[in-house]
Length: 61
Image 1 (cartoon, rainbow, N blue to C red):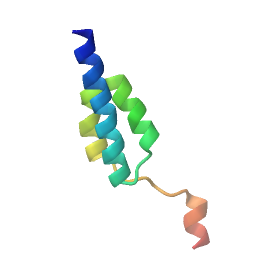
Image 2 (image 1 turned 180 degrees about the vertical axis):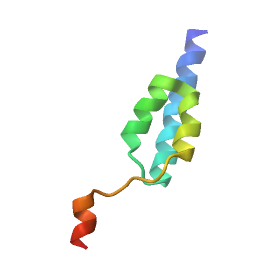
Image 3 (image 1 turned 60 degrees about the vertical axis):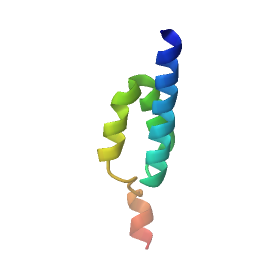
C-alpha cells in the first residue's frame, strides 16, 4: 500500500514537471507541490499562468 502511494506521488511530480515545462512555469516549484500534494497539484499547475518575467527585465526592453 505504501509503495502504491510512493508511485502515485512520483508520477504526480513527473506530470507537474512536464506541464510546468510546457507552460514555462517554475518547474521545481511544481515538482515540490507534486511531492507535497500528490495528484491534487496537477489541476493547479494546469490552471496556473505562465511564469511572469521580472519587472526589471521587461522594463529594459
